[in-house]
Length: 128
Image (cartoon, rainbow, N blue to C red; front, side):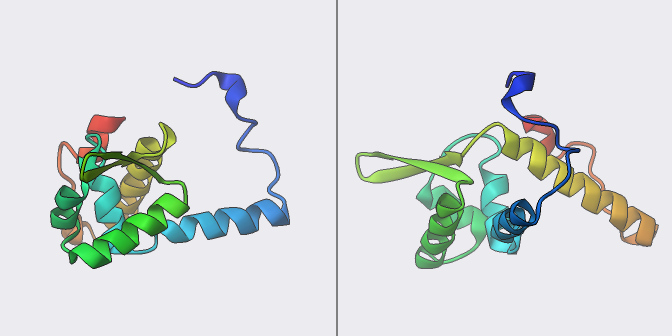
């Protein structure tokens, strides 16, 4: 668990430069296939072949998405023999992914309760 002094207050005013940087960082979450990859890693590291299955993409397309997520510093990788294993970059990501999902469930429930699908245990909840 990080020490409270690791970060400054999230409530501090947001500068224009920081807002631009955050907006750019959030673009990495903007595709369903990347989100599926991130969710697949909530239980821990996985090899590329597992992530191909989890994403539902081809090997080439999955590799492209993994490269984008790694470049955005959302994932780290480690080669072991012929396989590359990926994992979430840091302890903030499971909390962020959980908050994104919970916000979506909240908004979806508020818009049309008949469309809401809220499962008692989500993969993200295990990582939080």
